[in-house]
Length: 130
Image (tube, rainbow, N blue to C red):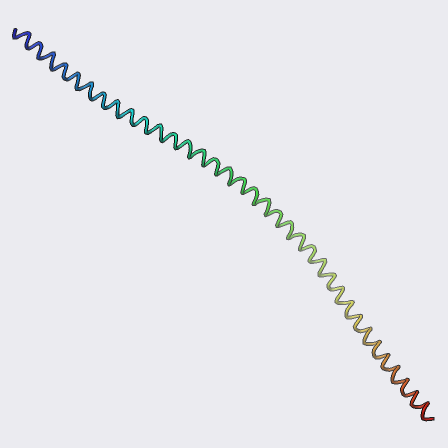
């Protein structure tokens, strides 16, 4: 009987060790399951972040292209204004020269009229006096 008791004690202790090992394995499995779920959620968040970054990069590239075309348009308009500026400047110089010529003509014409008027007055005074 003593052999059977020893044998039962050994079986019982082996069973306890097996149960303890299974319990530890179960806890480890639960911990691994929790970790795997956490990793899965992290991967899901990473995928969403990657998609958001791709969308942001795409928008930034589109905005860069828009800004580049707007910059080119502004430069072309500036070039046109510079061309028009030279044209307007030359026209303004021509207009200033024409204005000076017209002023000189008007001065000569005024001097001529004053001369004619004075000559006419002198002639009339001489005519009336004689």
